[in-house]
Image 1 (cartoon, rainbow, N blue to C red):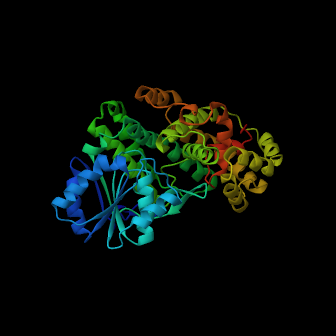
Image 2: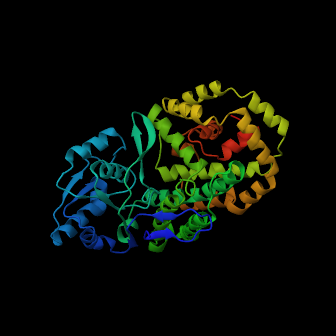
Image 3: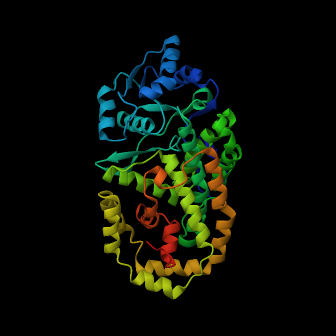
Length: 431
């Protein structure tokens, strides 16, 4: 049995995560020599950038030297590392093949690149978090920019995740808030998971959903204390982000942690890659996407479903024209999304008719799920505003008047049933 597992779940699916150690505590950095000894790691390879070197790398190197542990390292020349072929190629060229273990010192991009390096070199690896800013710590995939496209690639799962609260609490405030923003997304993700289960029959596990809800509740309860860098509030965010990753591993899907709000963030990133527009940290973008999603769900609760209107709208929907608009919106990334639609056929008229029947028959249950899972837009807006977080698309790199288009194009990123697809199904999606 894996160390992190849910036993005897009523859904009948085994829930396990193969991470060996998760340490989120003060002084956790000092325990790394003992962990390396347990892992029988003879010589680790450290990956960092100038910022993460100052935050934790220098300290860890001193700890390893004191413990008489030999190591090699590579520090990127700039703190602005992009998750692309160039960055991965650089660290691969500097990789010391005599090293049998990889330590990623950093969050986000350093984590993603190190996971790819670990997979490609068949080494185990450990993450030393320098900020609780995203929920990819426990994920076996890396978010990379490949030839101008944003892709999720299979990589390595961490052997250990280290969150030293002395380091995390000192992280830049915008990174702390980005991590909290990534946690806010879980309201929408769990809600949409339940709705999809009802409409499409997609697999859903209530016990896994509850794991996510509990972690989210702890984060939100202590959120006001983040402004003061309260260690328990920081620990709650870091634990929540790791728990979200574990929940995804339990479910075998990203459903417990991401929904339409993440797709809004992906669209901002795609436009940045295509048109060099501004963007922000993933979690910050996701938080704004959560606000937009909550506003949309509040609108949805007051809609009346007109079956004939929905059928007429879908019958007249021009997929090719839609994909042309998508290309104008995100550039080259639209090509992969168009190819995905050829496989998924989510705009198929017959498939729509079946979904529409399910929606109409279960509309009251859908509204109950929305009311059960989602806080009000105003409550989350006020919380984010109080913390000094961005609350509009414009603040994270996309013009506010593009909101309707962004909502519509979230339908095309993955074959995942989300709010925009529900609105399209009932003939209420406008852009």
